[in-house]
Image 1 (cartoon, each protein chain N blue to C red):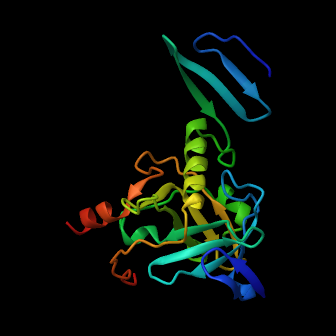
Image 2: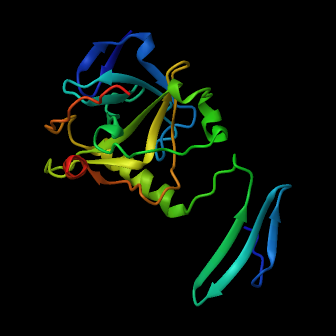
Length: 146
Length: 77
């Protein structure tokens, strides 16, 4: 299907790239339909709204810079997206790029969880005090290598 | 909004399986104990607010400019 995207303009998107968020994302509850796109540069992805071309998020695999990251979400909470086994899940952190491009951060407090099998997603809220909405990706990557 | 006055160690029951108890009151701070089934999400309002705010900031990023980050791919487990 053809659709308008924030990053690429109009592109052809495969049906299999669609992800529906029954509850939306926090603050964006009205928008439930997204597509997951590869970003031009690894290890990033775009979560692009299907309804609003200008609404898109940058995602990253959080385990790449925080190997100790773990998410503890109850089966009941995951029930929203119908998760059977942890292997069915993809976990992403939403990336914030400040206007000056410095100190790019990732939100580990509210990760995006996508069930690969039915392509339904949710934003979880983690009760673990280790995780904040802003983790400096470069700084934590450096720390994880140290 | 229903407003109830409670003393320390008194409780409020919500529905069939949620109990909120006042554990401690010190100055303007109240410590609450909450017993609820696992499927009931209980979070501080600030946590939701912070995530909402961060989502807005992430979405507001002017372009879809990606940071240049050299992260090696994850080794398969």
